Image 1 (cartoon, rainbow, N blue to C red):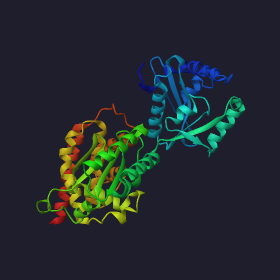
Image 2: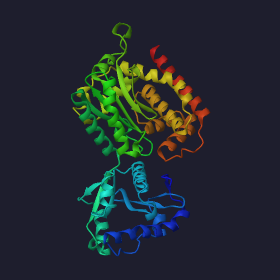
Image 3: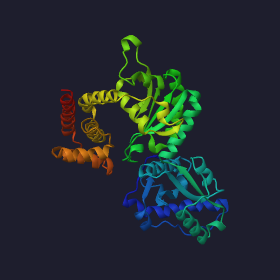
Image 4: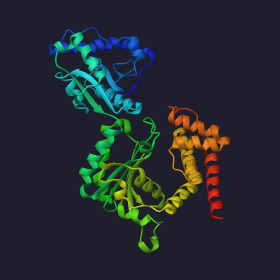
Length: 424
């Protein structure tokens, strides 16, 4: 049996109420019942926030709704003959992915506390009991009592963190425990902090500041923490970027790139990012832009405020680093073959243009809007990139690689030309 979970098609829906009734028949083995008739109807499924199925024809499904502004797993059912094959777990984890990308911070559910494949099953998949109920969950529980479910067995509400707060909280606990006194501070940054964060697209950006340059031993210690984090939060797998840098390394770049010929090879930093495994790499002046931004706007997760841990970076060092990025973008864009990478390239060069030419650090979306207003001849391409990124564009849509490559190269030259004029 395949564990591939997919969104339900309209042709799947007629089958699901009967499948739910089959699954509910197992409650008789626990001396629970008779249950009320299956609550799920085809019309309700068609109106649900999401319905995920496994198998073709479907042998299991998860129905997800919104309750109190968060994802709620309204129903999980697997055909009895297909149980104990991991299908329920696959559906739960896929529901968690859907909830995370939907922008929910948590996913809730109502279940029997003492049935093995109910609360104990969910507890093994990261759910804990919730007693402080919002109005929507309170209304659901009242409906359950009215239907007589509480008379059949103890009912509880459970919750699992799926959003950014849960991910960052688990990351903070894991790194603090693993690095101990070496961890001077941990800070969220990027779009989550400055605005325009897209739960379906954006990465979680985190900077760890440590007391000594990362090495192989630190990498070996941190790798299991990050692997476990992605296991607990599948909706964020491949979308977590953690950079680890020594405070002394930032100090050495604070007024400009250090002279490596005299000081020896550059310190190592450590990074995991989308498309890259956790690895060590040499520090370069390119990273100054991030370090300076974190000092200014980073959200504290562990340790003092970022301004107390990170040294100030001179304005000319930040500008030089930005210009290095701009010079490199025409080369980088040649590897941007996917539609997502193309949209990212367009939005990123717009940000660089705003930072250098306009002298203002803006989020990608705000930078795109500013750029279109100032350079309307490129508005069509920038609008395409902005809307794909923030309005749920399809990964299967056709890209615009040739246009994107030309735009990035042209805009890079314009930015560099503006600085040449400033220097004359």
